[in-house]
Amino acid sequence: MNPALRALKPYPMAELQRRKTELAASGKTVFDFGTGDPIEPTPAFIAHALRNAVPEISQYPSVAGTPTLRTAAAGYLKRRFGVTVDGTKQVLPAAGSKEAIFHLPLAFIDPATTKDTVIYGTPGYPVYQAGTLFAGAKEYPVVLTRERGYRLDLASVPVDVLKRTAIAWINYPHNPTGACVDLAYYRAQIAVCAAHGILLASDECYQDMWFDESATPPPSLLEVATTGVLAFHSCSKRSGMTGYRSGFIAGDAALIGAYRGWRAAMGVGSPAFIEQAAAAAWNDDAHVVERRRIFAAKYQLLSDGLAAKGIEILPSAAGLYLWARVPSNGDADAYTARCLDAGLVISPGGFFGDGGAGWFRLALVPSLDDCRKALAVWPR
Ligand SMILES: Cc1ncc(COP(=O)(O)O)c(C=O)c1O
Image (cartoon, rainbow, N blue to C red; front, side):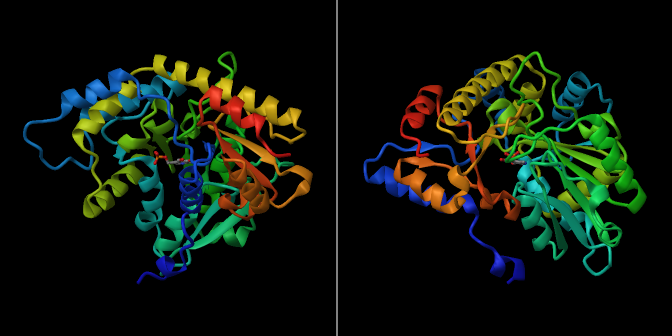
């Protein structure tokens, strides 16, 4: 057995889901703010594109993806970020960004060398760590703090670690805190990575989920560079397509080419009918404006409601989450258990690594009406 599998802790959300099912079976009304899996219907035009694309003869999908999807992805990057990429050489489809994130170290790290380390921030998305360990690579988690805006500043990492580092993960708008960055931040990280031969990987699955329509949208790493870097995009939250499993990777042509080779060996190709639906989604922005309006309303209602109860919220401008401090400086696991007793599923900060201690995360999932009902029973 791979030692990483033996050491694997259960995926944090699984235990919460078990408790949730237990509560629901006992007849309790449950409000699920746990997993970031939105309940708003997938826009009808996307489902139609999928149905129309189901072929009579089903053959293996290509790892490189359909030209339609790659063109749509490149078109989206141009429209949204002003970034020009070659859809053939610089875009690769993924069966959801999670697998592409998980697999990256398997393709780009040789654990037998001294360039064997992956840097990621904590709190953060747990998959950066899981992919590192399964690839036999070494992890270097950096604790992100409120004082420093939950920014992973690579210049603060010791030089001997940077020398050993093959991949650095960044993710803004940040899961779980909603922290955002600007182009100057990306420039600074690119400079450190260029100096130390590090592949800078930017997880950009919340880029289109900002709350104030009149504000400047979150930028992409690709606006600063398209060499030495990869950006990971996803249809999941932008278009309500978590179940479709579709995203894309874009950036450095040589890295994309190498990753395509690895992915062909492994056999991750996303079905052409899914890619057809994904292309329709990337080609349209109007449905995303509508989705942003819904999540912004939930964010406002919940942050006002929790603040009124004296619970401290981290103000955020984007993402799918609300990051809040456990009342009375309490323990997040104990508070999560109290919330569960009240029928509220939340994620304790520790789910996102040691840097999450003392905080909890709400995913903006229940309907506005359910958010109101949940606030009525929220424990202080
Ligand atoms: C930060 C981050 N990256 C990537 C993903 C994976 O998204 P998907 O695999 O649905 O594209 C998620 C999902 O919640 C996430 O929070």
